[in-house]
Image (cartoon, rainbow, N blue to C red; front, side):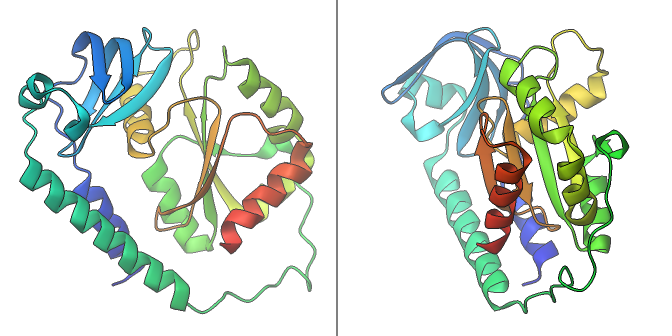
Length: 246
């Protein structure tokens, strides 16, 4: 099973039903967790994805943990959900085997120092699928930045301390393709981009900002950082390298 097939299989298994999109619920209870002022984003065979507290938070819940009334409302089918979860586990296991036995890429960093780049020259893209194609061609990883760029104080602080430094830019130029998944309050954003960003947040189960997700060129997650990380670009680069060595 090749990496591309593993990615397509996993995404196919997560195919979402949109009939409940934008439905509002005053309360949603999932096991011991209770959410208020809920807006449904999408529903899959296994999960419901939503915002809560009038859009201030984002979460997902297993349909099997909901009340019988909500399970019926969202057309929960235990047999279908079990089949999807089993296929997801199988796809993940097959991908893991592919990664474990894949030959390591030669390390050329010791023979040729990277060219210095400037943060102003970084290209933060918004099309995840397009970036994956480029990452495959260039043998790079992809970093997704889930952020609220004009209202989230920790996002802005991390941007200034890390993402806008030449040190990070130099690292990114040689190893990363960059995707900005922004949820601004005042910056203009067209409907298509808003929908695409919501879909990515659902796909990667994003519940807070900032969240950074590192994936390989097949779209499989290598690791993530949730929230602010102290230590500047050195700490962040070290973390990304650690994800890649797992």
